[in-house]
Length: 307
Image (cartoon, rainbow, N blue to C red):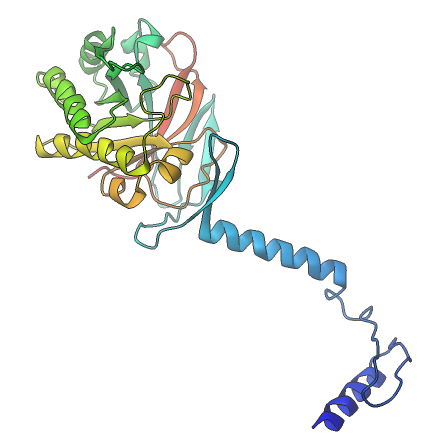
């Protein structure tokens, strides 16, 4: 067998034009030029190998940098639906994006607002947006973690509704346990009881990235339980709950399969989102411009129906 293999290699070498003639006999070393085999040069092969590896990584993992600057690779779950959106269908007009397809689908445009926007002329804003998410309140970062109603909540929800804008609400959470998540949900429920909501009640979970934040030393399981306390309470009250956060928090702070039981609002400020899973709403900028709102405002696209 060894003689057959060696002879075959020799014949192949002789048939290839440009073969280096340094064959030294049976069982001896030889070299062969690949200069006449396009696409198979060593430098090309290295580039192709690197490209294939990068494709494999991004097809199989969510790659994020944690708050300590370490790169983490999170295996993409086979139990969550991946999206099939083609983001070449994104259109931008006056800083406002829309996702429009040939079959007639057009995403809805929304704002999310709080007391930070000050007074809003909702009559003007209503002509530029399809929906609005209004902050009900928040929990403080400190050890006591008091619950606070947003200073413009009632004004915003009443004026937006009066001008025909479909609304949902959100709460900025700093809950450290399931029980505190329940407490936050009940705080929201007590304040929205007299209003009609067309959109969900949203849990906003983020890492505040401050030294004295009450959530700093929580485990992934604790973050997950705090989120579920809110989401389950809202669902049990007969409303539609939704989870809002960004790439790193979804990937590293919570059990994503648990929170993906609920509608998802995904934040990433980019030309297009780099996220494998489906989501209902994409928050794509914090510096949008909308008539009736002074200064920058978050802008969002509703990419699919919220059930």
